[in-house]
Length: 449
Image (cartoon, rainbow, N blue to C red; front, side, top):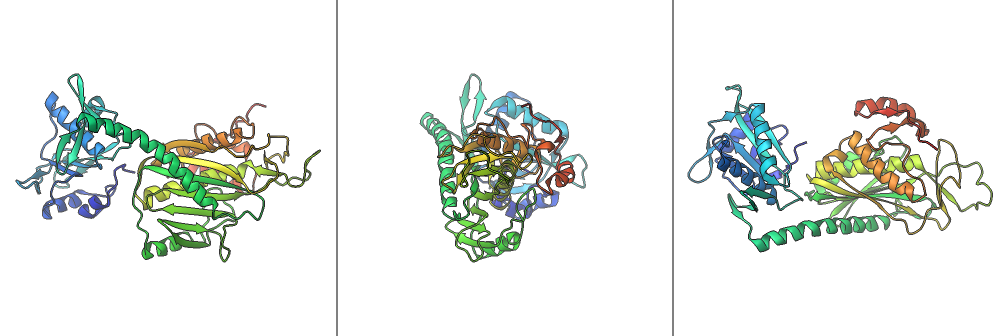
């Protein structure tokens, strides 16, 4: 997945960056597209002089510090900065590596970029190099000039450098943005709780996600029809369960999907998909079946199923990240937050369906419950694979520590599945086929103690 995403650029090309070919880029010439804040044409490759290297570094940093964009090498503009001719450049792998090395040596911190090699079918080895630079949550990015640093930013089709007060403000905005993300995630979580039923005396696992770089998901009648067509009757859990979406509606700046049906409140499943790519996902976790509660235990005690909890976290991360990346075109990293919300006044413990162990296997959950938080690349969370599982491990382990347990047994820190900690039918059999298909390793490790 290319980090930079832009509906405007996609419309200019007539294709996404992932699928763009030489013919798509030639439409920039036929349509006489002008350079802009997110589009810059260069007739030649950047040279090897110090001045040329600084020019490349400055152009990349300026894009990252503004709205992101494309530097297209191999297209020459006319006197009005419109794409005019395409002399082309070498698209060799060595040139791609040189570009990345120059940026890495001259821009601080290193911005997120992709270098696309788009070959001219009529001239093998030649065509266009497209440097796609994502808008950066780490802005401002500085360019090293002698012993100092300068901070470029796009100003229309040109570049200007930030003054000292503007640099200070840019750093302030970077740190304020991280704080705002946490507040937004908490707000989204609280909004989610208002739609969840408390009748069945179980525990809700609520996952919330806020991307670094907001996107845009248009909420209109067409979007509602699309959401209903895509999601209604679909089962969102990665490890299969009987839960499915039954109802979709519009809320303020968000779509709401749940299993409410004719009920006003969700019983087991609920999600909110926001216009900017943020969202919440809630699942009512199943209780471990216990033939007896043990000495001194009361009937209103609950024992949360550890496998269901991990499945809720995994499924919530993937569902929300897929919305942020694929519907809203959000980017960068994402702040993810997971919390347990009991709907009972009785004590809550963490149990295991695998061993049927009842309290006091874990300590009693302390209320109010602290949330688990992590930051991960959005694209990694929206891709089934080890990175997704590794993030779920960190979040689940934090939650399990609220019960006095050191870590999550079902997953490993590097994104493997510990097969001995899963028992719910048909999950063990499902994993034998699913895990290899997404590049996940199955481990027979048993934790000590």
